[in-house]
View 1 (cartoon, rainbow over the protein chains, first blue to last red):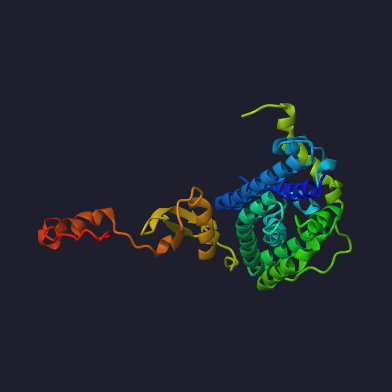
View 2 (view 1 turned 120 degrees about the horizontal axis):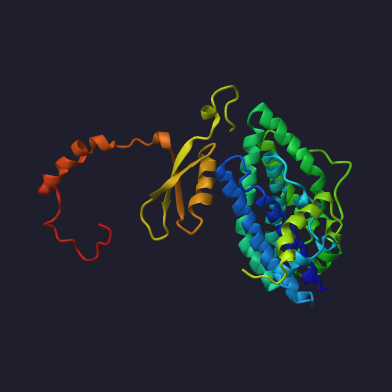
Length: 250
Length: 104
């Protein structure tokens, strides 16, 4: 698989899996307006995934379509980070997760606008506006929950702690991103850390919360197909209809 | 900021209602498009964006707390609006509008 194909697949998988998780909030959000907001964010991410997976399928020599990649790959062939596959928890956890993930994506797409791959540069330009809004949404909520009641403050702090072990993996360099960056197609994840941390720190302090200390354990393995326990269940739910009726069309 | 802490009916702790106004790209004024609940005005703006501009309805959003709107009541309609009907001298019907003046 070419460097660009593998890189595009990674980014697409992040977006696809997180879009799938966000879809679970529909009919379960605290208020109906939040149902819409989270659903919209999920839709944006799936839109990004579609372009990125299609690009991967074009370049990897297998000619697979976005649907074949989304529905017919097994767990070990997905290259998303562990953060996006974690089970849905309470609303605070979701906002903590979204804060970090969208902060990462903002820096990522800002860098990818200059990608030498036209498709990636194109989706980056469009997605940048989307993830700017996602980051704003998460930031607004983290500030309100953190600087809210004593109960919401405690739970929001706890949410930050529970998300903390999954953050480092987003900014790990690996062979694929290294190769893509070398070719001018991609951005080194580690290069995105400072700016992303800057934004998250500002939000956390405005929310009167504390950034968690470095954790003793941190997730790894997602980029090479080693996933955590929730991933299998997520894929079963996401893929079972397509797999039950292969080749079906709307 | 969060809602004040403490006991109370769910009505006290639920989100206030906001009216949403959207100005279309080619429009000149904000038009009322509906209402939504939000914890505060900033979030109301974002919820308004999510709910009422899904199909590119507009380029500008206003949100106003519903309690801040004072509206005329249907019962007062007659006394409020009928007396203006027979005052022809208030209408500029005898004035010719020049062609270049578009938005009069």
